[in-house]
Each structure stands twice: as C-alpha cells, then as structure tokens.
Length: 73
Image (cartoon, rainbow, N blue to C red; front, top):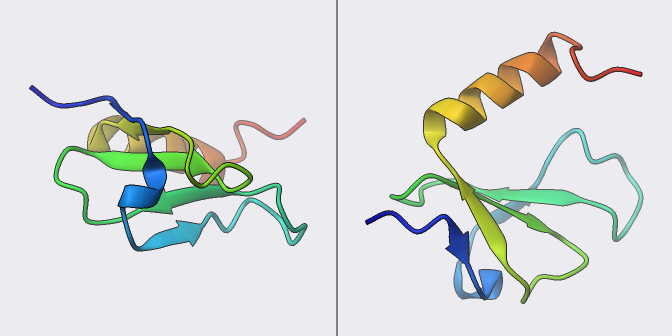
C-alpha cells in the first residue's frame, strides 16, 4: 500500500524549493525527487511536519497546469 502522507518530512533528504515559491524566506513549497511512492510535497516553514505524497501522474498534471498559467489570478 502506498502511503499518501509522511508524518515527519525531515526523515527524507533531498528537498528542493519549488521554482514557483518566490524568493521570500519561509513561504516555500518544497518537493522531493526520487521517492518511490510518488512526489512528496511539504511546507518549508514546517520541515518536521507532514508531507503529502502525490501520485506522479497527478503531480505531472498539476505542474503542466501551472506552466500553462491555469492558476494565474
């Protein structure tokens, strides 16, 4: 069974800041590449907090929508 949540995201190494998070310190979305169960996503303000694990195809769809400007105000 694939876990959809990692209770303590700091147990994973290799977090990187999303390029869409902006340059402000502390208000970033971070993702982790190479996790076998999907794409972990966490809030950088809470590195020991939970991470959601998104299915790879759902993550790819989300990234595509962001790149196409679907979430612009």
